[in-house]
Amino acid sequence: MTRFYAFLLTLLCCSVALTAQSVVVPANLTTAGGFSFTDLDSYIDADTTATGERAHDTYLLEAGGIYFFTKVNRWTYDVTLRATGDIEALGRPLVDRRDPTGGSNRVDFYRGSGSFYWDGIYLIMGDEGPNAASYETAPFRPEGFKKTYSWNNCIIEKCRQGTIRSEGDSVKVFVTNSLIRNFGDYERQQGNGRIVDLRTNFGDTVVIKNNVIHNILDRIYIGFRQRGLNYFEFSRNTVFNHVGRHGFIQMRNTKETVIKDNFIQNPSIIGSSPFLANEQINFRNQKNFLFTLDTLVEGGSVTMLNNNIHYTDDVLNHYATFDSVTKPDYYSPVFLQALTNDVADADFEEVLELGAVPDRQPLIDYSREAILYKDSIGITNIMVEDSLFAVGTDYDRGYLFDFERFNPCYDPASVSATAATDGGSVGATSFCSELVNSVPEAYNTTLKLTAAPNPAREEVTFAYDLSVAGKVDLSVYNTNGALVANVVSAHQGAGLQRITWNGLNTLSAGMYFAYIRTPQGRMYVKIFKQ
Image 1 (cartoon, rainbow, N blue to C red):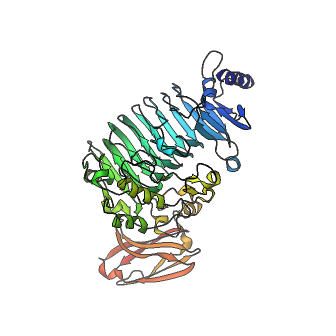
Image 2: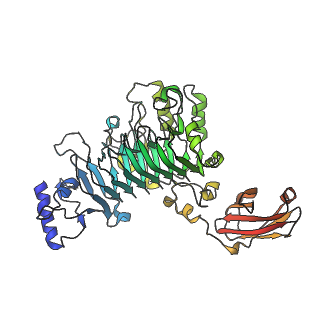
Image 3: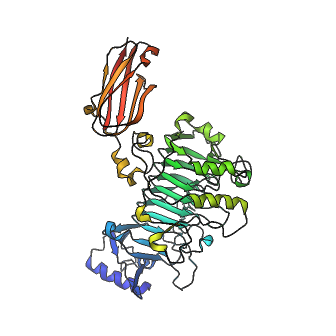
């Protein structure tokens, strides 16, 4: 097979300059019974010049194509896999694993030492099938030093352990703008299933940003084994259907941690109990926290701002009616000790439902069964399958969702739609056009905000004109930027609005700002208290 790919690549190289850095990889180099695919690793292995040098470093995968890794690849060079073609019409190229001998074993597909970049790929990282309880450990286990590993605009699913288990030092990991689902040991009480794992190494940077993450069994990030990490960021993610076997995010020996502008629904549905806290370093066999920092480092800091963390009634009822667990506490003591901002600014609670997402009841059922039957295999499987694919097949285990309907977006008139640190929406807004469009402009005088009388002694009447209905926030601040009062926080219809505020009588004489945020923009006026 490798010789076959080498022959094809020779033909390609004859038609383009050998200095070309990218090449389109055909998706039909193997056809069996009408099923066309390409063994991607064999193609990359064969992609050399006549003198044995690498011919390309970027491989363009055709939209709608199917590609396989067939062995453990130990490449020492950098590789980029990027989608090309009409993805809107044909879908992302799919990358999976197969055993060329016909067996069911799927080995790791990468243990190399070069950098690796994925862009626009649908990546199935684990054994896809009804027997998901025997998922392998993370198939992507790079061993490079000071390398970069990036996934952008991908769909990533079905891995027992996680997107990456890094075995090298000083690496940078970026997971951005992606849909991530179905991670962990299924049908058994265990753990595993996280986005990034640095294991026992020292990391430089980990950024998990603007992703939709769901049906995850364990922590989003595991760092309790790591020797150190310079920078960690978890921002603008939407997370739901999270079992959280050991919590939500666990840090250790981290210089700078930034967690902001996330939409987090029902984190750690399984709850907290001494039995579940076997990996809480400072509270082992006592309790799980959602956000944990196990150790302080000199000059280390945690910044956590504007995260909507909330629980729905069905999950709260699970905690209330199941004596074995309790609702987890949010922050460990060391985490709070490192927090640089007021803890009141770290999170807020607005209970919202997303437009159309997989049901969370199977995760609630799993969370009970995992405690009641600790050694059992065959408890509720939380891996959700696409009903367009699975109906009438062995993949139909009763937990299906039509991903053509997938809508991980919330009400654009909600508080969360303008609650991020930049005034925009919390969560993965790039997946939600209404939320993206709700980000206010910097300044819009057509709101015609006025305050009268001005100067005033005891009360003032605000007037403003809304061209569209939506969430309105009108607040008064002092000249240092501190909030004095919230005058309006409500959904209002289009048209002229008036409201009289009598809060001036409690303020000292001087200048204040009235500041309004709406779906059509922002504006402020100065108020003078006599």
